[in-house]
Image (cartoon, rainbow, N blue to C red; front, side, top):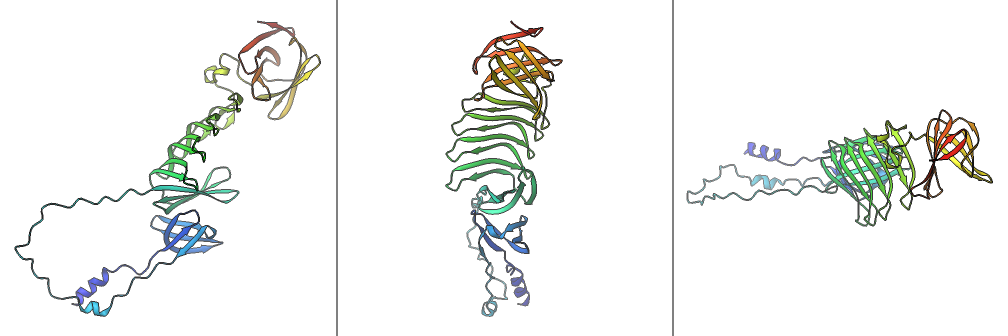
Length: 357
């Protein structure tokens, strides 16, 4: 009798139960509070320890203690061995179908604790299991809990799809797509082990390409191009490991730059004059020189020093207008384009005179 009573108490659930926290963004978290500091709680869950800001908690429910076992119930526990099953008992040979638990719904929510941080809360079937905190520059500064492998979705408050991404070994992998509230694609990017790897594109709500870039090892590598509302290129720059650079070879350039000299990192401002145009050049925001051309594109004067390469001139609405090519601080070539269209004319220079090709 005593041994049976002892075994009964061993099988009872533990008296320590986790609290339940309902967060303002709809997430549900279960765990024991193991620490408290500066408006935040440290909660131990079965996935690990998570830090919760008190301001994010909508409701906290204390767990109910297990009901006590009545002594009368204990007295009714028999000490005798159960009677043997009658020989006539029917033997069931068919096994019941196994019960397969449904896969947990994987979601995440983005909250902004401050203007300098962004926090992602990952949930399995509505229960928070992990968090990631990023700084204003997008760098991961803290990760808590365990993010399971799978495809996670984020939704707008009205239920519309906001973001879809896949997590592997706690990091973003594969295609990430973000959507506007109306459902149109906003961002399409590719990740490898948490870093951008491959093309990265932004779109307008009406489906037009706004920006495209290429990444390697989470760094800009290759051409980055920005587009205007009409689809014309506003700017294009070449990068190596997140730094402005010149293309390694003509084949690395986009179609608009093929079969042309290396594009310079110089920007230009054009001022119309009575006798022609004034081109003022800057490198990294600093003035480096200027060139005056008459209406026939002959060189009137030149000041300062322009680095070798090709400088592109765009109209205010982002259309390619002219290309000036410099070599050894001398203008060697000028291309004039129709307004955002094909090449209109090309000039070479002999003793400051423009010669049409």
